[in-house]
Amino acid sequence: MIGGKGHCREAVGSLNSTQAGITFLSHLTILPTVLADSDCLASTLESLGFEPLRGSRLEGFGGAGEPVDVEITLPDGQRIGWTRQNDGCLALVGDLQRISRSHQLQRLLGRITRAYAARMALRDAARSLPNGMIHLSA
Figure (spheres, helix red, strand yellow):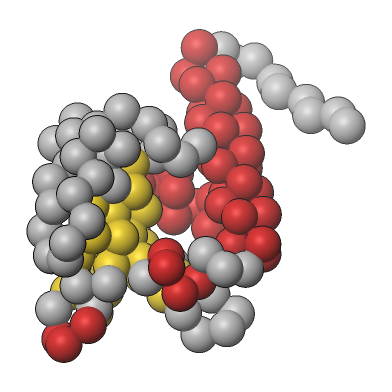
């Protein structure tokens, strides 16, 4: 889910979106999410067919960049990533102005969020019931 709690600052540009929780950094946007576990996110991304990179850097305009904990390359070659925020949540980082024009990105982010939530629920259930069996049905 996008738009979680967070307090962001204006980094570059003329738009100040502190109240919205959005930061713009050399054409890279940092958008708060409710995702918190980078290992679960990376596993989720793998299950969706991506090859997540850990501990990389997204480059922005003019060589400025943002370090990210997890990064993927979208089918069109654009890159997005997630970085840890002060509140412990992972924020989405990318040139969202360019790639958000596509409804495919919105659908993808929804798929990632749903798959992440399911993976976290299964992990929590397995921890709660270490000798139990979990069966999924549609």
